[in-house]
Amino acid sequence: MLRTAFSPARGGQGWGEELQLRPIFLREKMGDRMNELSAISNPWPLEKDAFEFYGDPRGNHGAYSAEWAHENLVHVPCPWQIHMGEAPVPFILIHRKCAESLHRVLWKTWDAMGQSQANINKAGFGVFSGSFNYRCIRGATAISMHAFGAAIDWDAPDNPMGFGNLKHRFSDATPLIANFKEEGWRWGGDYHGRHDFMHVEACR
Picture 1: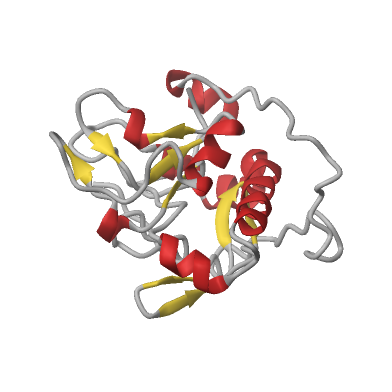
Picture 2: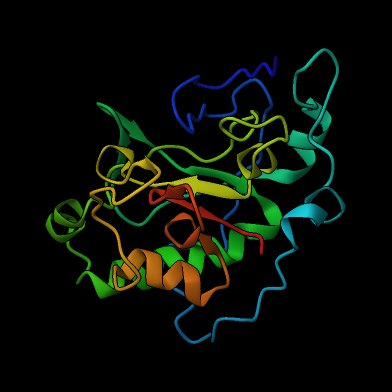
């Protein structure tokens, strides 16, 4: 069984105190949104090549490697307020190779929502459901893209995972989802078979 020092909730995330993870600031001030930079084409790996691209997060005795985590996981602040349950979330824990892309997505979304927390909350973007979480894919034995720090879940209560015609809030036209897809991230709503509408991942 995989073990993690992070929250056991769906896509749960802890804040990295044990790992002494370093924060990442892509500008000295978050107000400088890098809008002058065009989004680059991110050559995300095929899912089968994730170990080669992101490194091996596996440690001993079913736990993740603290050395890998220290070298690869960084903190990306979100320009709007996000929370997990009742707890505010100070940053998103993500693989360093995904950090600049994530930063662009967040600020482009924030601008598209008029930099309004009320609009963010109405769209469900304030509900954060986890990023790095060392675990297997649900119902499988292979480790999840969450275990590489290369996946994020948003608003899980309104965007379920499952089969059939599930009721869900997000779509291709949702600004947050559209901006991730523009950066080459894969959205779980596009999966064949079992959908995962809350989920985006930096792989192909």
